[in-house]
Amino acid sequence: MLGRTIGIGTTLEYEALDSDEIRIASAQCGETSFRIRELDRMHWARYAQAAARLLPGFKRGLNARLSGALIGAGLSSSASVGLAYILALADVNEIDLAKKQLVQLEFQMEHDILNLQIGLLDPMTIVNGRKDALLFMDMLTASVTPIFDSPSSDSAWIIAYSGVSRELTKSGFNLRVHECQRAAEALKDGAKILSDIPRALFEDKKASLPDNLRKRAEHFFAEVDRVHQSARAWKESDLESFGTLMNRSCQSSIDNYEVGSDVLVELHELVSGTTGIYGSRFSGGGYGGCVVALANRDAADDVAAEIAAKFSASHPELPAQVFVPEMGDGIIALDAAEDLKVQL
Image 1 (tube, rainbow, N blue to C red):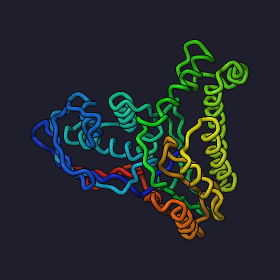
Image 2: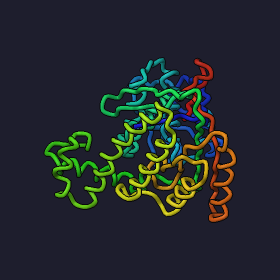
Image 3: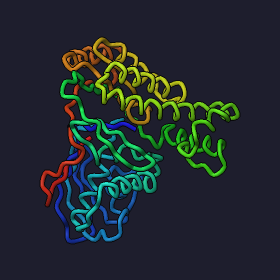
């Protein structure tokens, strides 16, 4: 998988409490308080509640203020805020966590406690994020290799938010994950995920799969190839090839993985069809949210304005946003004793 961190994120300011109470204030959601071990999966503070259930030894709570400018759809905002809570609670309870532990804990929080069938991509990207590199991540070994930006690169990233948010637990996201698992099981006894299946075995037996499972597996295996091709293209500063691979990835998401609302598909086609864009694809699960595009740096601001104007003209009812973000490091401690900032 490939990942990138931008300089927009979640800010959590906190101080320790000599009790097991957690108090949170949010400009967007208001104020709340609860005890460690409490959990309401429908509450806006469910990520804080879930984080407090992760590790034994959480005896001290905290008083915290949450803020941030991440759009809540397709930019890993849930992993960002989840990691912020985990690190804050670990800090006030004097628990040291290595990077791999952080990734696994955030995964457990969303997957096991909040019942979202996520993978490791979002937390791995945030925990290892660098403002000067694209990350190549091997999900089987949990290894991360930065592919540094070329000093002479004329690239920029554009984020186009459709104005349509999504809740992955209520979309088809979990269903797609289960379909991939069923495809793996059908291809090989005992297989749990498609990574357990050799490509040659899939090619030999794919005709035996139901149409929907074959399509999900087609997307998976082709996406693995595209990731390796894209990593090579980035190393070689071949932006044209990288953009073409982004477009192919998105088209496969539409045709084979069968995600993408009408609005999001329309936005992707608008973005990729605009002069100055090398390519684009959905971000997140593809159910609403954002399109991320690679653009020519000199033209990026004008291109973003053009896309915003055209999309708003077609959908004046949607609070869409199109912008050119600066890149950022994944995690920044503003003050090691008190404050934490998690960026994606």
